[in-house]
Length: 461
Image (cartoon, one colour):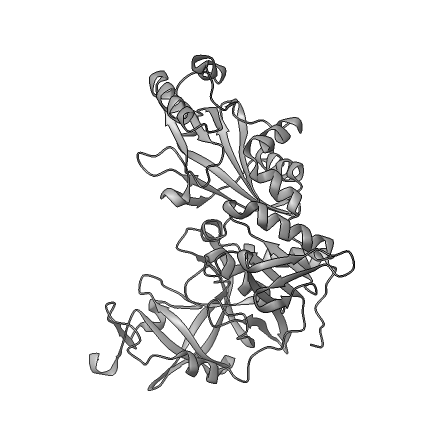
């Protein structure tokens, strides 16, 4: 009967007392059949004749300090198809779901939800006969303040005994930066954000130092993750070099970042390593515009400002006349330009390979929006998971090695001549590729640091 059902909004706070979780925010989704719970380090084990599972739960999004170690009896193992179409074999457990005036037992599957907005999803199987959903409302069962959350978890905050890691970047609120910091904390490390502009260097033969605002000395960090925006390349690389000189591990070295940021030099370096790229011309203020256009096979062609980033300063000239107009316009700015052949058969698509320590850990296809030729997520492009060929994998790894990068986003375009390399990015974003592939790239980056420093978790901590 309707009177026996509770009304819930599109998101609600619940507790899971059987698992020792005092508060978790759940997305209420009647479009999903099965409920799911965020879980990492999932390990099955035998308890008598029964199968149980242990897992780590970080119940508050973007907060690696709230940590619960859980165990539960396995009642099933099912293949679940996610909203992105990926299939995953998941453990299923039964647990108590509780709010202030409501308690029931539900089935939930265990999966890594790091890239999702909620640590728990409540599907329609858990709601049947129990709940009615008002999608226009939220927290109808009660809201929780930050103070209440902290109080609920005051006995569950993990003591960190791991590495001291610094994230050297400009904006702590960017998705990629939040994910990296969360992953480091979740893996047991102490991580701090350092704004590039607020770091400064003491150059001295006896006591060289790097200071942060207020005079904090950063010499004792174990590792730095440099994520330097293009406009701060020179200063950010100077800081990275200083960290290297102090013996701090840098996930990407300054010299490699500098190479990747120089579009012309990086293309020359790639070609010198036998890596195919679209035919490209380089000029400053060419007097012979016609020959420059002819050099790359004529129109249509791509014209790029050498200093452009994220699709800015990139123009598709569909006719010879349009190409002449754009080149002449850039001439008036006395700008360095690249003129590149247009790969029509790519049909507005390219591939981003995420490479860590010489291995492609994830790959996605980017498709340009209608009326646009650039497959760029910043311009409204669509991302999806893609299976790359052995040749494309080899190309991505070879390009990353040529640049000397440990972490890179390698952009490849498929042509009638085979895969061609477009660009190697030393600070690749995580949002698009984590969403498209459902892979925890941030944690792989932190585990790379652990490997380079030969760090092993103290099992007694």
